[in-house]
Each structure stands twice: as C-alpha cells, then as structure tokens.
Length: 75
Image (cartoon, rainbow, N blue to C red; front, top):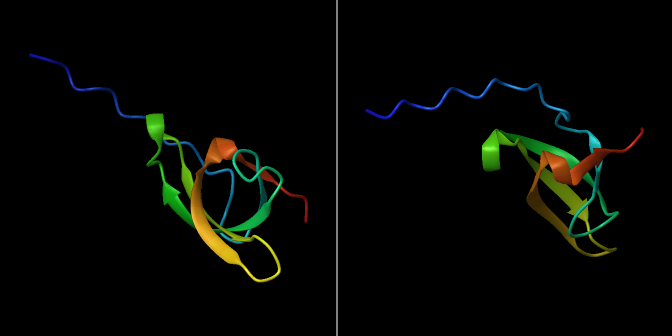
C-alpha cells in the first residue's frame, strides 16, 4: 500500500493585505497592492496573493501572483 505524502510545514506569509509590492515576472516593475492572501494553493504549496494594480491612468486590474513573483516595496 502506498504511503500518503508528509504534510507540508506551514510557512508564515511574506506579505499581508495592504502591503505594496513590485511584480518581478510578467508586468516587470509594475507596482500593486496585496488585496487577498489565497493561501498555499500554488505548485509545491507556494503561497498565492491577489494583487490590485493600476496599469495606466484609466485601467486597473486585480490578478493573482505566486509569492516568488513579488517583492516588497518600502513604504
């Protein structure tokens, strides 16, 4: 009988709702604000965040990024 995999040890989140972040992949350098912590839903249990961005003067969007694609922006 196949053994079940060991549970992944929970890792504390790097960002909280309201934190300002910079996108490292895709829209490189675009700034956004964390609006949701989706939890460890990514590949290998990577934490996913909902990020709201202002693309230009008229357009805004909210999408999801893995934790590895974001970096903190000093306040």
